[in-house]
Length: 467
Ligand code: GLU
Image 1: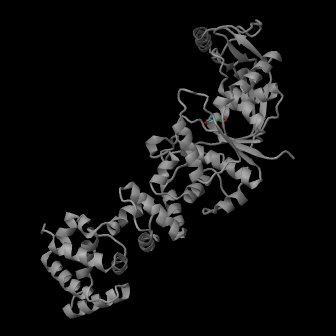
Image 2: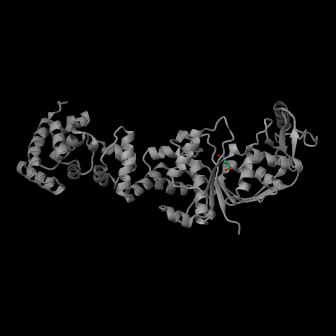
Image 3: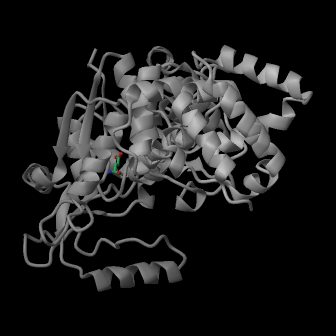
């Protein structure tokens, strides 16, 4: 049997987006499962819109998601001669012809056809003229006038298109550059691609490409067109719905394994299982379970998965990621060991690493840099609260070991002496330590902050101007 080869051929005219990453993932999973080959090809034939920056961004996205490639990246911009050789072959074998109709003439044909209730297409003026090359002449493919083009779609089943519906489409522009259908077919054939999973926005291209494969004498690969991803309003996912670039999800604090798990489930299923390790995805992936209907991008589900993977993740790794987020917020060179002590306080509940960084910011600031929420100060740092802080400060200061248990004992004794409830001191201490009213457990927080910072913050809170 022919070895399985899949490919991901992004155009570097934009970042790696959610839809592209999902397509890449399905192809990658299929290749990994079948011990096949995964080819990465940069379709940069649109010189005006393709940039090196976008190419780098796409490679960065693939790498971040852990989708490694076995061949490439190939660059189509370096392969023009190859495509042209095959255009010439089609001319020689009578599958293509030169056409000298101007774009205005072609537009007029289309308008006329529309008026007459026919499908707007090139009317074949030059089809049998036997023209040779010349300035302003494009090369058109000689689409059969009758019959059907048929292919088996892995997802949609058998597809048959009347050739009459198709145009004599251009395969080489007047400036000598081959067009997308030509480059994609030649590359897929030469790179021995056997399976092409792509978005169904390409479905209308497929019959034309199948005709090209056949005319060039190449084997037609297996196509599978996955339905689009929709936003919550059931319209095609776009910037209006929020971030579409994969790397923005990294910046928002999502873990790559959560993204991969999430993307895999956008259009693919394995029973009712939701959580998949990378190994499980590779093991279970099958094109048989790619869905026919569009999937809706669901942020809540992504958050749920991300929270799951944050819970599961290794602390050393999370410390590294958290440090990265802090660095982006302007706090560089943080002590990793310190970050490792605060991560467990957030790990059970954090939805994203950025959220963790935002919430844990007070930990890495010096007592003098804490920003106090004026509302919290008004409510929880009244004179009577400050009195408690002063008393507790003195007691905490005497502690030889500054751990949760000892802190709790000191607090309990104080509550008893004063005959007050925990409530009377909890928020005042929390606001003193963090500047706000929400934080992880009080004593855990104090232990993680350490004696010096805890006492310094209580002192600062006592001395804050009254609101
Ligand atoms: N470069 C095309 C795109 O980014 C790929 C088309 C294909 O998968 O054949 O849409």
